[in-house]
Amino acid sequence: MDCTKLNDIIKLSKNILIISHVNPDGDTLGSMCALYSAILENFKKKCDMLAVSKVPMVYNYLPNINIIKSLDDIDKSREYDLVINVDVASFDRICDAGILFEKAKFTVNIDHHKTNNGYADLNIIEGDASSTGEVLCKCFEVMDWKINFDTAVCLYTAILTDTGSFRFDNTKSATFEYASKLVEKGVNPSDIYKKIYESDSKTLVMFQSHCINKAKFLYDDKLAYTVVYRKDLEKFGANDECMEGLTEKLRAIVTTQIAFVAKEMKSGWTKFSMRSKFADVAQICEVFGGGGHKFASGCTIKAPVDEAVKIMLEEIKHREI
Image 1 (cartoon, rainbow, N blue to C red):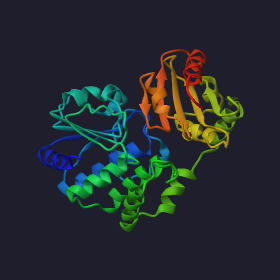
Image 2 (cartoon, one colour):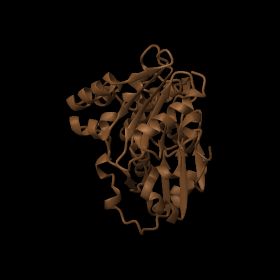
Image 3 (tube, helix red, strand yellow):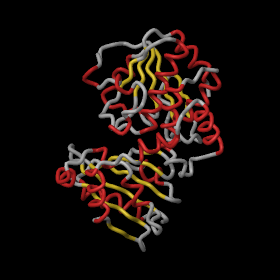
């Protein structure tokens, strides 16, 4: 990891923009806010932060999250000295913010997805890391940056969420070591866990119950999937936040080897969220231009939802389950 070069370029840059990926999760938001806080602490420089889609309310406790800008708030003609993407596996995941990335004098890509093809001037990609938050922990150590309480809360959130509370296969001994150091900075694991995992709305619970109730099972229940139509969201008054964790609930069924949720999009296309216990779902998603992790990936198929599900099922049929 060339973290020394990151330190040098931040030192030289007068205006910096940090960008999270579309449909932001705890890792991209925690990493963005952690980097903002760390740069402020170590260089006394304020950065701009940009989320290209709505920030889930569950992360409102993150320090400085209230100053994150949307695409409507930012001057798209501006040329930044430095633009940093965090947890952005592929360039298209920053959507219309791509213009700001391309105009920047220098670009950085900090990530942990093995499918990331290194699209920036400086690419800090650790495919074996649990999360981008863990990549930043390692980088901050290498650069000897001070980590204050705000930074620690953000980093812990990033690691906690992308490891599924330290349950997923991406959790290694180094993950616990970094988490321990963050707790030493004052992070309260119980408090953050409750904020993220014990703050579900009634709408979310009822909507997900509906989706799980109409799930379908194939191959002796080894494959579980459900289809979310726009009418389902409208029926419950649910939003994209209510989709969070739905695929994991299907994977949690003892017989399930592969689980997916197919969501009907406004564009008429279909978004897939895939999870597995053993199968490499990243390979499946890559067929359709997506990707991610071996056991947790996603993609979009440019077809109406029912047709897209048939296409996905046909692709899965050729795989070992």
